[in-house]
Amino acid sequence: MGGARPVLTAEPGRWAEQLREAVFAQHAVFSRHADVARVSLANIPTGPNALRLAEGMMAIMVEGGVPPRAAAIAIDRIGQLVAADAHEGSLYRGMQRASGMESEEFVAEHFRQIEEYMRSLPADRFPYLARYAAEMVEPSGDERFAFGLDLMIAGLAAQVPSAE
Image (cartoon, one colour):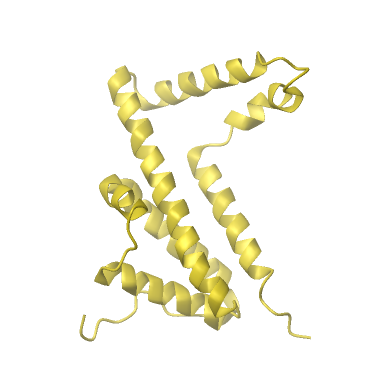
């Protein structure tokens, strides 16, 4: 590993934004290389690139005031979010290819069927799922990923001691 420089440099005043940017960049790589995402689900990434990314993320969070234990756990949980989302995307792409449909057509049809099914659920047993079926299927995969990541970052921000 020698003198490899960290891939990220902490800017404490913008740690949450930096973390978000780093995670989106990691997600883009995993989305292009779904085999890496799948493998990372069953292993603790300890290769040089993974370690440099983890070191940078840890620095960003700790220098931003996130307690070290929370930052350490966050690296693992965020990694799971990234890998699972990228792997799920690869599964959808496989189903789309097998269907013979174009991507947009496949996604629209797939989620139309899910929404239709949810709307058909017995309202006496599933009042919220039936009523909010559209809300369940409307957000894109990118919106869903961003929402999950933002929830995690907000949770971390809640652990940063306030400067009183």
